[in-house]
Image (cartoon, rainbow, N blue to C red; front, side, top):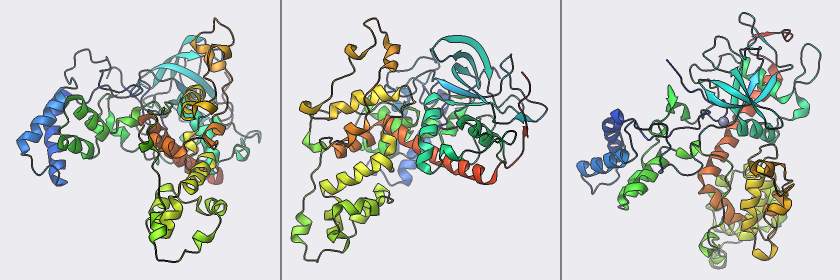
Amino acid sequence: MGSWDELCILCGVAPAGGPIRMITDSDVDQETKNILQDIRDGGLLPHLQDSEIELLIHQCMASTGVLPQDFLAKPSWIPEGMSEPSRKCIAIGHFDSFGEPRIEGTKAPTGKDVEVHNVLYGCSGSFNAVEDEEGTVVDRHLVCSISFENNPNFFLCQHCFHYLEAWLPMFGVMPSHARPSPSDGQLLPFAGELYEIVNSRGQRRHYPSGLLPGIEYDGIEASLLQWQRHFIQCRKGVKYLAQAIEERKQDQDLVAALLRDCRGWMFTDPAIWPKPYAIDSNLTPTFTREFASTSPTPPSKIETLPNELLPPILRDLPLRSLLALSATCRSLRTLITEPSFLDIILRDSISHGELHWILPVASAQSDMAAAYEAVRLWLPEHGRPPPLDADECPSEDADVDNRTEIVVPPVMPLILSPEFPRLAFVRACWESDSMMSRKRLWKQVEQFGFLWKDYRSHGWKVDRFIPTVAEK
Ligand SMILES: [Zn+2]
């Protein structure tokens, strides 16, 4: 079938970067009917005729350029950072001199001595170039495709690999508790455990996507139809499109709304931290004590505890639950939405709780400098640290790539500093496609954490391994 896409086992995005078309032209009529039906089923836009809505939807989809002209070019309606082409990936496995998997019949080597390569130019589940530690790229073909029979080798996006390694301890998977290799008792490296987890499940990876059974991918896999080329397969509901039509938005605004319903953010680079808008007091809502001052009810017991004691008690509550709790009574609402208390909760969540994903990961090349440059701008000018300018580069001749060698000051102290507007920053993260993509990866890592703990407790579900690595 020529070429095709296979998907990253963590995020479900193809190495090509994700869709660059909304819909194929032959599907426009049917999808227009589907969207209209969803609008009617939801009781939305009751004041508009079917024909009016159909016309708007049809025009919206047609304006995205459904005709297959120049079909590899990324159109302007796709925001920066979304569906960026040619993601860097990591290939994991055992490869022979031709780059094919080293397997004996149906048996593969164990995770001991597994190879880990930075790879580029992925197509059809395989890669055509390897980048060494110095950043030199050499031609080398490495086969990770699920279509190669019994292939135990696989790939992840480079950032997914680093996030997985960095975040797993947050879900109780500590490196020091790694599984010993049966051949010599040595603890398996992170990649070796991942390789064994992927290959020792009851079911092999899905064909043809390459995704892992037992992991929920949020429906992103529906976008794979030989290639991962169209957003429309990921559409979930019509909330944003219907709202845009209601507000009489047109053209690009309608396309942006449809793209949001198609959850285009899942395909966005997860390392673009939000920069502050013009300093706007609307971004930092102030919660007043009006409820407390007018409330006739006596303070609850929880309210009488010092603020410093409450975060540890409430730490395990998801923020959403915490806010739901705040709706249960006036005294709790006053307490939880009081800015200084909410700020303690946010600090706690970011440093070691469920918002930890907001911080950059040191091993992910794209993270540190990008996070620093964005986060520093949120601090007031008088206390703002300097940008990563030429003074910090190793030499005046340093090119862009050398920036990755700059020692970037840690970002967490900036975010946790007293002057940092955490509430506004977290709100901006929630409005950012990139940060929502990042938050989704955190949930993906949590799912891998469950597999990891099961593997460490119970070992291989199915033994598909030979005990020692085959001779090279
Ligand atoms: Zn990925």
